[in-house]
Length: 572
Image (cartoon, rainbow, N blue to C red):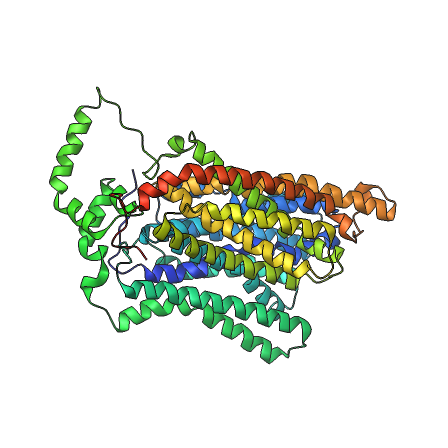
């Protein structure tokens, strides 16, 4: 049963605007390439030790079962407070080590500190994602794409801050993460809370989503352009601060929607679900555990009004069902209804989706964790442009994947997972480009990989909610996210790090364990790793085809013209 969390009367757009800032903050694990080389040089790590820290980075970022469980029991501000605390303590310890404020911290403590610091991402993302998915129950793909898109842009935002304010100093970056992220969370946590669900039944709301998407695209283009210009041109300090100020204004754009709604309120009859259910009745639904009608992805205003008008009949039916409990067993949920976590994990679709997601993000994060070393191996000592390219196209994949899949789901009932197949086929080509080190393809390959990597997130999230419901979405989503650190452990920690150090020993004629200060050069540093990743994505493509075929009837039921659950009032 969902805890009785009071639902505010205000529209959910304030929370979505604040969630954008929290999602940017939750991208702190993407900063690892900015300070990883400093960790290696200052603390004397070899590549295997560094890649194991990368594994810690991904474990902390994606192991969010605990926030997934308790997000149904506590309000979002508590989840955000825990995330802020993790950021403070985790990155604080790393700052003490890298700044040499405290000497001789053991490696296991640094590993644990990185897990704790990056675990803030899981707490922050869970709080805003679950809250906003419930606030916008019939626009899941769009909302997931927007929020995860901003999370993907966070690497470029942090890179801008790192270059301008922090003077490209790794210790300063860690101190900023330890202090800046918690301060931001405490400033906006009151704004992220459950609100009366939006129905997206009018052109104004569609326009609001388009406005946020356009603003995020302009921000991404702006960050990409300014980063490249800053690398090729020597910008003065005042110009750099102007660039940073414009970036902040772009980030504030989503807050213009609630400001506009406040200054020029629209007809209250155009609020869809808000008109069908007032706040008191909505709270009573949540209090009694009757959340399924509100959380159905295809619920319409008419269905909700009908449910509200027949509340007494529903109570009678509930009593009769309880009285027959000793004789009849509760019907197991069908795909598209609310599952408990235990009911979900015995389904083949659950594990197929997990494996496909594991292949996509697990292989992609291997490249992200080693991006600085990949750049050096190919003759690029500064990974700033590569990280910004990856960040921008990661954002584009997340935003575009959510919007494009939403369109084809509603117009052609095309399962979202078909896009996982397409992107993993592209990833095979990308890894082969990386493996052979074709001259002039590093930028293009990095951008294409970022795009495909981003699509994995924006597809997995709404797919999981459509198959297994939103009631226990927090824990189901966070379990799926384990695929990211699992892939990092297998492909980055155990494979890429070993091969890299082996190539170092061949180039310098030294033992792998004593290769701490040596750097590998040339395509051979990661060639075998990329060939393995290409093969893995080939397997993932086959699995995603199987999953898509299995899900076709489910999407026909949810969104087909002849389905009683077709979102007639909320279709695009």
